[in-house]
Image 1 (cartoon, one colour):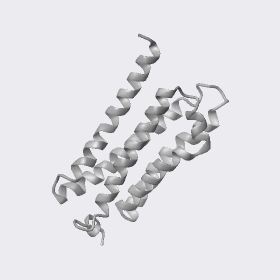
Image 2 (cartoon, rainbow, N blue to C red):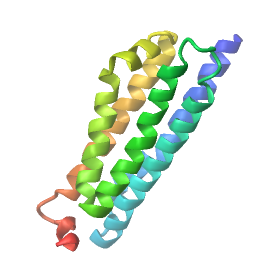
Image 3 (spheres, rainbow, N blue to C red):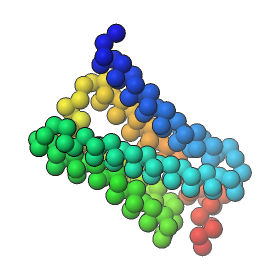
Image 4 (cartoon, helix red, strand yellow):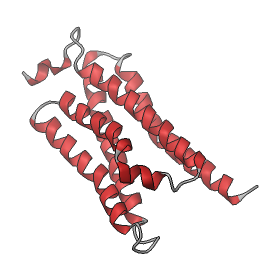
Length: 162
């Protein structure tokens, strides 16, 4: 067995294992009572922000691995999830949770269209690119479903903020 296959399988397992609670929390919003779903939606955003902080730490830790060639790009790329989590938390606290989730959705979707992020992803092997694409699609779908929960006109969970 090649070392690359073991490394990829390990990273893939960690990635899917870390987003599994997000998928569970997203699905549980629609199958629980309204009071519990409100709590689960907030828990979803907290867990998503924790994952963004871990992503920041992982990218930040490899910034000096390749010398000075990619250092500035890695620093900027690592700050994107960190600042996104903080800004989304402030938006959620000072406005309402639907705007915070919408901000996270916009960042998660649009970060894949930043040219220097794509140039760094192009350095990776094809299985890693596919994994990044799958994870980002899953995260966008989960964020859309949580946003849909917050703006649901039938249960109107944002009524608490009025």
